[in-house]
Image (cartoon, rainbow over all chains, first blue to last red; front, top):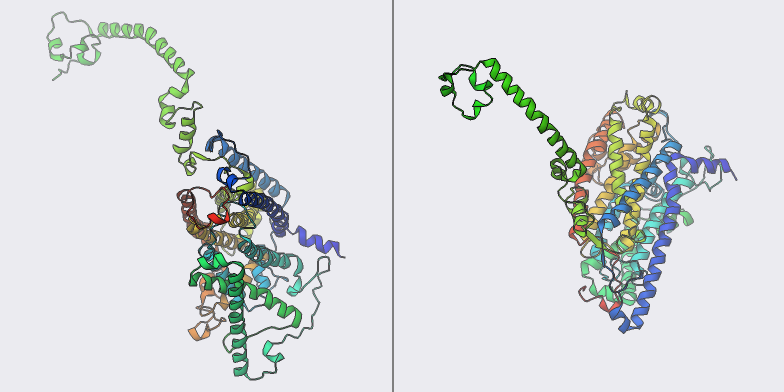
Amino acid sequence: MDWHQLWVIISAPDNVPIVGLIPLLCFYIYLAWKQAKGNDDLIAELEADPAMAKTHHRKTWPFKPGWQKEVHVWPFLLRIEFLAAIIITIILMVWSITLNAPLEEPANPNLTMNPSKAPWYFLGLQEMLVYFDPWIAGVVMPTLIIVGLMIIPYVDTNPLGSGYYTWKQRKFAISTFLFGFIVLWISMIIIGTFIRGPGWQWFWPGQTWDHNRQIYEVNRDLPDLFGIASNAGKMIFGALVVGGYFVLGGLGVYSLFRRYMAKDFKRMSLVQFSMTQVFLLIMLALPLKMILRLAWHIKYVWITPWFNV
Amino acid sequence: MPEENGNGGANGNGGANGNGSANGNGKERVGLLQRVKAGVQADVQALKTDIPTKAKEQMDGLKDPTKTQVYTSIFRHKHDDTPRNRALGILSNVFLHLHPAKINRDAVRYSYTWGMGGITFYLFIVLTFTGALLMFYYHPTKVQAFRDVLYLEHDVPFGKLLRNMHRWAAHLMVIGVWLHMFRVFLTGSYKKPREFNWNVGVILLVLTLLLSFTGYLLPDDQLGFWAVTVGTNMARATPGLGNEGPFGPQMGMTPYNDVRFGLLGGSIVDANALLRSYIWHCIGIPIVASIFMIVHFWRVRKDGGISGPAPVMLEAEGDKPRR
């Protein structure tokens, strides 16, 4: 166990934000979960008792008849805002006094940094470079993330859970988002920050970064496993596999929605549903491709003269 | 027309007649010196009573400064602790009128909003302020950029603190934006009627990351240079628009005309890239982000204020229009 190596990584000034983000995320997930549970319990109680549902104020916080429903922004909100500004300023001051912003040697195109890492918030995308060609990891994926985020309000037809924390009313939406945000984005950043060492090789926490380590890894392409040698054959085979994934996956999503989210499915238009299908399958393809690579050393699935997937 | 006998100005008592030519013909002609003397004496006499009276008035007025003209011209309403004045304090202030006068009693709860939107905005202000100060000491040229950072670190008073604050506030802002988006998703706040504002928010998220990324190159050190090299190398692989991307060569893309060349202003990360980065970082993206922020905040209000905490809905109420 090389504690020094671990400390070097954790205490690198530019890694401090991601080190800090982990406990922050845990805290806010807890906070959200606690409120979601409270609301879900209340919903269950009200569902069971329609008479109560008619008169209840529908929040977990206390409310009594005669209490004012609204409060003045001054002072009740502004004092919180001013306090938040002061606290943030203090945090920034202390942080800036105790920890210096990194400054390396002057830029030198002849001396490559190893590992040469992007800023921590882009490390998820850089980690994807291991599994995908740059045009996918660097261009297509960011575009799809942005577009995928933007279509969320237009494909989520569930009217419940607007303006309050809940789990039971939005199980699918919340688990999809958590999967995308925590599993695909944050944990890839954590891998990129703490695990990847020189040559972008995998070093477990506490393992010494060995700049001379060589890994003898023979990557294969999926068509090779099936003994397909000709270029045309590889192209057709890959297209069939990728196409098959989307067709079968699309059927799977359909069967899932029809069975378990019948109400949402009924509310969705064809465009809404097909967009949901496509983006869900692309999201799922990420870990699938990673597993193919890690377990069977498969580099490409679909090989064409112009691009490889 | 007044005669030029010099009477008009000096005749303190006669001035009320306003008849200069009649005076000029008067028989009992009083000497100029005497008249001036009498006038001054009268003035001094009046001064003895007028000034103390005025001074007293002034002092009395100062006992309640809120009634002075200067004060009332600045503050348009009284400051007594009444509901009306509390509301006016928000509504009549250009900075505070972003807020409504009153909000739901539960909307101020920290556990609901996490305060992340406001904190992000505050960090943007901090970054604008520290960034403007840093600009005084920085030249976006290959010769000077790195030296300017060294100068900031070692010679400029509080330069190190300034740079550190700018760096850490930027990181904190990225975290703030992510947590804000996370909260908005978990509370379903993007749902009708806030779909559009969620999209504005996604654009602001991208702009925040781009702001941070363009700033990364500016110290012109190894860290920024290689991070930006790695980052922009991906642009080389843009389908159709990059020289190494799928269908790029077919579209006529070379290292000297593709999208990466456009981003860097050259085929390598060099002086032009530094200048482009600087201009995007200090002028381009902040202006665009500010415009989107204006829309974002405006739409929060126009879409009915912050989304909650709203009363919970039951399954059966899902398809009914709300309230």
